[in-house]
Amino acid sequence: MWKKLLPLLVLSSIIVHAQYHKDLIKGPFKNAHQVTEKCLECHAEVAPAIMKTSHWKWLGDSTKDANGHMYAVGKKTMFNDFCISINSNQPRCTSCHIGYGWKDNSFDFNDPKNIDCLVCHDQTGTYKKKPTAAGYPDPSVDLVKVAQSVDLPTRRNCGVCHFNGGGGSGVKHGDLDNSMYNPSRDLDVHMGGLDFTCTECHKTKDHLIMGASHSSMATNTHHISCLDCHDEDVHSEAILNKHIKTVACETCHIPEFARGEPTKMWWDWSKAGKNLKGKIDKYGKETFNKKKGEFVWEKNVIPEYYWYDGKADYYEAGQKFDPSKPLQLNKLEGSITDKKSKIYPFKVMRGKQIYDSKYDYLIYPHLFGKDGFWKTYDWNKAAEIGMKAAGLPYSGSYGFVQTEMYWPINHQVAPKEKALRCIDCHGIHGKKRLDWKKLGYKGDPLKLGGRFTNKLVK
Image 1: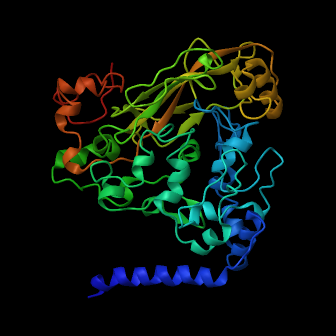
Image 2: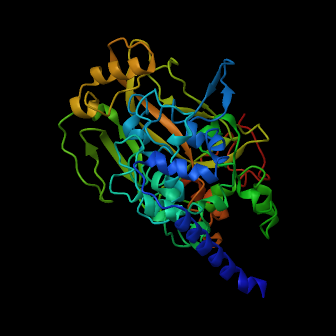
């Protein structure tokens, strides 16, 4: 009986909750800050909690690098090989920040009025931020209507930023794009088959959301795992359960990523500013843009597989490197000899980005704004402004270096009947997917007649 009544009780609770805010919040509001002040009249404890999170700071916990130096990783400071960095580009990049007014380094992270409650809690589907306004909402938004609608976050609240990272659907994440708003069961068994919201897996306490991508990878903290919900002995076949000690669940259960929409796999900034003729690829995506350079998009991509223990070492500003070799922006930690490591699937984003050819470190280019590269097409000027804002010297000489960045594949879990089979990794067919020797094995463990254990190449 209770099972039959539960959906009605939940629906009743939602209706009462929505009506409560409608009765309580009247407006009008002169600006978005006044909405936040209204929210905090009843939810005062939320502000100090939010201001401790990586969603607010765009920085994770502090950690030690290989030299014992303490540093923190997050969008605020890190380099990527998409739009490179928010440094000196804040008004454009912070349109996805959960705050208002982060237009430069003077932003006050300690002022609770700067928190944007609506972007995560709007239920009208009408709330949107102006792309170039440092996180402020579009002037067309009815602040009263949105504030009256607030409730627990839905996929839309999360997806508006996370499905469109890097400037568009599927650009950054190979397993997150706009097809995930309403996916089929074949595309994602959790969001499609079971109608999960993001917070079903990304558990949240005091507004700290578990599974925070790069800030989690930098410190090996706040991770979530399939085994948080599933038992290690979930399979009926014992041999499959033994794999769990060395193989991540995602490796077998996400055979390909970018199955709904294509994802960007290559971004060459060295071509930006040139008058080249681009074309539209078979997915309907542009392969060249004068502002951003040359791209390659792919769909139904087989992941690359690496040993991974949950941590990665991130490139730090001012860190010198050898430009004759590809620069790993986040070097994965883990190995075949480490019992904490497992074989995980990754999207490896590759491209070329600007660096100081005298000092041999990456450059923060100033892209957005009146004097930005997207207006002037002057790399030298963009480098000069960006590095000044970052407090790093610029030699006046620049070049372009190939970079690589590793993005874990955790979403778009296929139905169990479409998971990888033994022959997809072992035997003749397995050569198309796994490079056993690259992973540290003598060869295919099955072919060698051994159990799936860590066997080193000698």
